[in-house]
Image 1: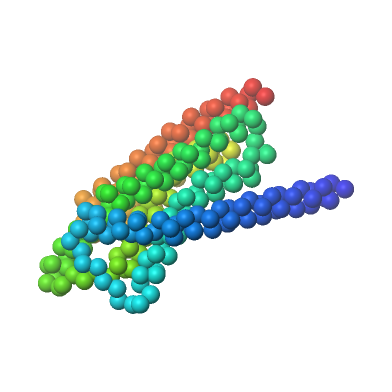
Image 2: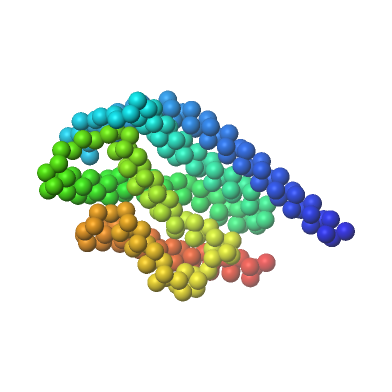
Length: 246
């Protein structure tokens, strides 16, 4: 009888997960449609901003213009649907949380979205100009003519900007997992050296091969990890106090 109840519980969880995924996909499709509408003015903004003011745009394939529209539509769709997707994750796990935990964790959704925007802004306004300047200077040093393909340029930009949006969500993810008891401050401290190494590798991979750029990107990532440890300690204490009150 117990095995049958457990099987029904698992089936119920899978059905709930399926429903949350379907709602997330539906909202993403709606956001994608909005992305197609907004893609044109957004592309025009990026082709005339400070990073691209001296660039003459070219297309090397007939499909390049369509590809750029698709890239920005997907980027806008992901950005718009991210809060809703996070809310669906929260709705999926909320039945197993106490009222106090529900009230505490619901704030992670807007915080995570704000951190995502901060990460995107950091990558676009600080990291990306450094990369563009370095590569442009390298081209001049080699004596080659710079001819930019619009599809290649924006693919390169989005591959740098969007991952940093996700990296900046590290503190809120750690805080969320700590409140659920999955992650502890001791674990984060124990793996600190490994985490530093991984973050530095990420910074070196995404930045030009020069020490100053590596340092400028590594420091914020390491600070994010330290902030994650601090927040994890606070969340762990509150969780322990809540358990003692029960």
